[in-house]
Length: 230
Length: 295
Ligand SMILES: Nc1ncnc2c1ncn2[C@@H]1O[C@H](COP(=O)(O)OP(=O)(O)O)[C@@H](O)[C@H]1O
Ligand SMILES: [Mg+2]
Image (cartoon, rainbow over all chains, first blue to last red; front, side, top):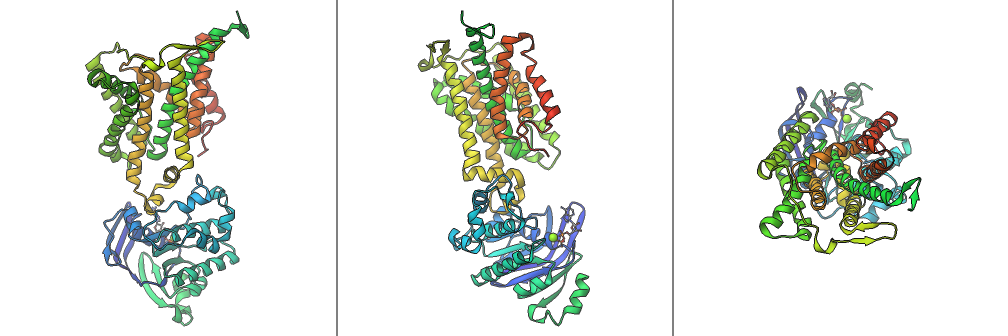
């Protein structure tokens, strides 16, 4: 579904990604694991067209997207949930939820979203940034489920959240996988990643240095500790 | 004679009305500036010139094509809006990656060119624009005579401000606009054509200025300096209200018009400076302006 080949990205003069290669198959949940500063967020932003300069190839459903603007990339059916969540302070919860454009039929409808995230319904008219961190993360995920995009990029959705919320996000990811969504997930917490993902790519210094199927995660623990420095 | 605080009531109400009318123009102009600043992050120094252009287009429509006031009230903002689209696409767009200062310089240069061309073609003395027939005459309010056209200007400006506010605060288009003001790249990643939104925002902001220009045409003579006379005060209004604040520019615009009018009654010598005095005081107490969010 997504094929990234030889991806190089720059912020100004800093060369951040040095030839990133990986694939995501339709219906998979795939993670990018790696230390802080390895280039995971930059990889996601590059897929969305949100970095100033990039080279290489990013094919989505066979179509090369490298020359497209971010809004055009979104309309091919990719949706992005940023690390900093990107909840808008000047919009209430409903407005935040309705902001992303519908790009294809088959997105979740509002009743389904409210079943998955009951809190959001109660807080519908609250200012977006008045929500708790966990609720903001729910909102950030919920709003990209609506659009009909089938490939979701989730950048560290569990970062800084309480264990019960992390579990709820885990359930949500498994639920949306069942509904046929494909997920590319950035995680630092590989114990969490192991509960939701099919495969893991390890990113280091702007390159993908290893791929580990989830079934071999246990066996690869030693190697993984080395990569992640935990 | 009926007196208020020792001043003749007709004088008082007369100045209050003048203040309200000036306030109406301050509000419409600073509203457009606020919308543009929020989205494009540039201070549109061409705003006064585009206000003037609105008045000139209305005058030209009547003079050359026989198109009257009521049609011009829609057509002139549309024409100036199209001019805004071209300006943004051909010129301003290329400056977003540079320092704000370049946008300011570009629009300032644009203002000089537009005003210079108008002066070259029509001189500085100004041309009269007749009040439309339906709004001639005055109404006796009991305590004063209200010239109908002036009443209409205050009403039309207030309604236009209200509509703009409602669109921005209560519609989905407005929500997209507010979101893009906060974080444009993310909004674009949500499938919104942000470059087009920016163009349309600029066009909408300058169309508001042109609308104000048409309203102003019958009150002030249509002349190349009419924008320049207003715009300095309008920048003060924007700073007092808080850069980019929609509500702030509306409330501050009308409020400062009234303060200016009342100053003419109580202490006429200060009427030209009172707004700048208010600006100094507000900035000392609240550097982000009355309605601005501290950075
Ligand atoms: N906007 C930016 N400008 C310059 N350098 C950046 C920017 N964002 C990230 N970087 C740098 O790029 C590298 C990779 O960052 P990032 O992709 O955010 O890492 P990760 O998400 O894996 O923690 C880091 O060294 C970071 O300092
Ligand atoms: Mg990151």
